[in-house]
Amino acid sequence: MDDTDRRIINALQGGFPISRTPFADAAAPLGLTEAELIARIRALRDSGALTRFGPLYNADRFGGHNTLVAIAVPAERFEAVAAIVNAFPEVAHNYAREHELNMWFVVAAESRQRVDAVLTEVQARTGLPVYDMPKQREFHVCLRFEA
Amino acid sequence: MRFLDEIDRSIIVATQDGLPLAPDPYGVIADALGLDVDLVMARMAAMAEDGIIRRIGVVPNHYALGYRFNGMSVWDVADEDVEEAGRRLCAPGFVSHCYQRPRRLPSWPYNLFAMVHARDAATAQGLVNQLAAALGPLDRGHRVLFSTRILKKTGLRLT
Image (tube, rainbow over all chains, first blue to last red; front, side, top):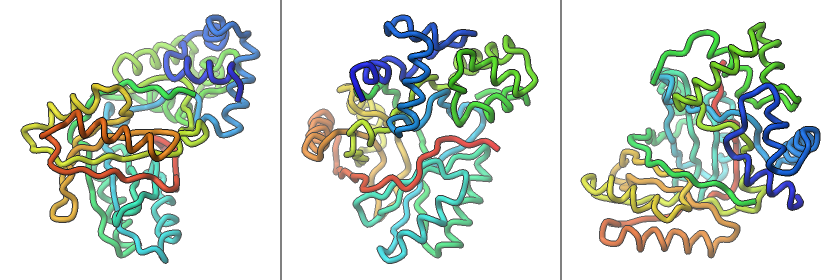
């Protein structure tokens, strides 16, 4: 990753234009051509520096529901339980963390009913209690990562 | 919250993995969906206006950028102090997400979650210490749970 890549990451974590020439529009203030910006973003995405390029959707704004779930998984079952949890398309991300509750994942779906069904199913398939901690309130922050 | 029609839903499904890396990405999506490009752009602009789209751009991988220490700081704050505590946690500007969530007593007394990210453990711990100082007496107890591994990361999926 060079300085140009860093400038792209720092400048484009939002505000990508909605137009017929959005790459050209976004490239100009960075001193790049349309083709250069497309190639840079492709390379950053393919190398894993970006997880994605595009819109970030907010499920709770269209009737969706999401919750943070924790499970205390015995060490010897950790990989097997991770496989069960990750197999659900409704599981958006899952992290191993240092705590007795050592697996933390987000379940997002279009309805509360579907989220609850996933939790019931996870509990049944793993035999482990799930801690369901839905968001009650969000405090707005505007952090951007510096590359 | 607002109603999404089939056109909005088809646009979400077509773009949730990302935009095409082509000079006219919205035109590519419109062609694939059999829609007019002006309609696709108008719908996306409306979804952005309504907060259904949080933002459009690059989504960096924290780990790849060297932010390997992802700390979930969790705080036990009196219910009546949550609003003030949330404001204080966000004020320094380095928390990426901050949510109130229900306690799960007796084992989980924490009701306020604030994510911090750093390139090394000492820096991450330093950020949590700054948050503790910002909360002062509102902090009845806190912990930070560092992530040791990403097991999955895909984002929202509509089907």
